[in-house]
Image 1: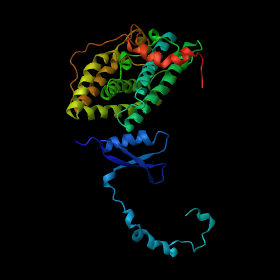
Image 2: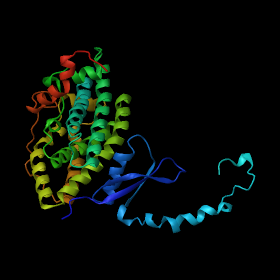
Image 3: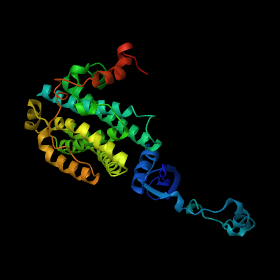
Image 4: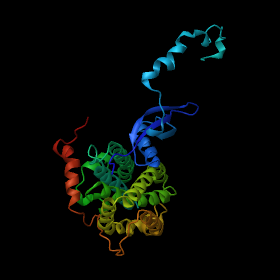
Length: 94
Length: 251
């Protein structure tokens, strides 16, 4: 029998209108307890209004060894940044 | 009336003070980090509630005693907590069983106190009930998880329930103080909460595959101050020694 509870990744929405951000991970026997543990571990100081948890094994990640073909090709394509336009001040942050 | 109200407020505040202190004993010792933080959060909530209850008690008494004075400068015979909350932590399962047995009572009590004729009591109940709604959900789920868990966890939880159940009845006792509170519309008669409590207990224990003992014998004496278990003095000596050794010390 495995003695370790599964690992869960925790995402918290800091305030309404913002997106959930990854804040860390924890162990819990099931999804409901993972939410409760996340509440106790990561929102003690009023950090959030919403919690997502996902079991770490369900996350598919890029392979660090493939970062060349994955990410380098976009380095030389500066024209993909909209920096060639004059943005009116009242548009605000983009 | 104010003597009865003082007594009632000490009962509420001493329950949360002693249980809060008991639960805080797990800090740094829990089986896993997540539970350690969760228990510490619960303990802090309870101590926070204590400040409100005992703060109001001191105000009602009118002798200039603060919540700290009541917590740190009374001796065992002045404490009015139910015996359940001073019992030793035992293993993690026993701690969580005790927590659930108390949380389920406190949730009902605070629910009724939100309608109190005394606005100060209603206000404390309003704030505390949000914390307790979470406590009871967490402790209830843990009792179910461990009761309906492995053979060993089941057997430990059944042993915890068998040990603690004789301390449940005291929470529903009524005396002259309760009658005065009920008459003034300040607090419910504790006996009136028993049916709802039993229903909640039956539902959770059924899900936890645990059997509630048939015997309704109840150890009592804590909330009236008639007697405490030998454990209370040990808690107080840990909790109060600094104020006793260095009177008036602050940081």
